Amino acid sequence: MRLLLSVVLIFAATEVHGAAVNLSLYYESLCPDSMNFIKFQLYPTWLLLTGEYLAVDFVPYGKATQDQTANGTWIFECQHGESECQGNKEQACALSLYQNNASIQVQFISCVMSTRRPPTAGSQCATVLGINYNQIEDCAQGTEGNELLAELGDRTHSFTPHIRFVPTVAINRVYTQKDQDDALSNLMSVICRHINGTKPEECNG
Image 1 (tube, rainbow, N blue to C red):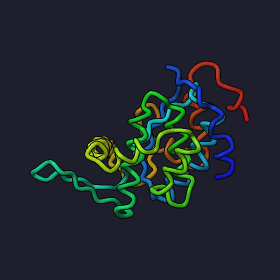
Image 2 (cartoon, rainbow, N blue to C red):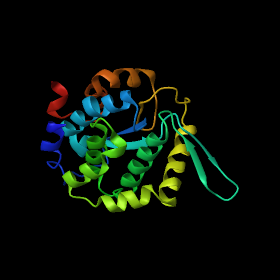
Image 3 (tube, one colour):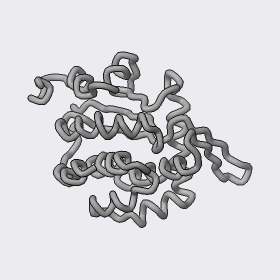
C-alpha cells in the first residue's frame, strides 16, 4: 500500500493510444484472488507500460446474480455478501464518472483493491488521488449505481466462456486459457506478446 500511495500520482496525465493492448478484467471487490491479481500483477504492469501499451477495461461484478422486480428495482446477490455488492457498485460508479480518464480509473481501482477491505477504502483512495468521493458515493447509493452494476452484470453473464473463476482475463476482447493461466503469474509476458510492432524495453526484462 505504501508503494501504491507513493507512485499513484506519477502517471496522472497518461493517455491511452489506439495500439494499446486491451485487457478486460472480470472480477469482484472482495475476492482475494482478484485483490492479489490487481495488486501484484495488473498495477505493477500498468506502471511500467502505462496507457501507451496497456488499456484496462474493469468489470467489477464477478459471480454475482441480479434480478429486477416488477417496479424496476434491482436486486443483487454477490459471492461475498452485500458489502461486496456495494463495493462493486462504488467501483462501477468511479469507472463511469472517470470514463474519460483511464489513469484515474486504474489508480482508483488499484488503490481500493490493495487494501484489506476495498468496499470501505473509496474515501481514502479518492483523497490520495484528489478526486471527489462524494460523487462516487452518491452514485453508488442511488439508482445510478444499480443501473451501472446491472450493465456490468449483463456483460459478465454474456461472456463466453461462462465465468467460473475470478479474476478472468480477456485480451483484446478474446479469452484463451493460455492468456488466463499466464496472466495470473506473469501478466507482463502476456501483454508483451500481444503488443504489435516495436515492443517497449520493459518487455526485454
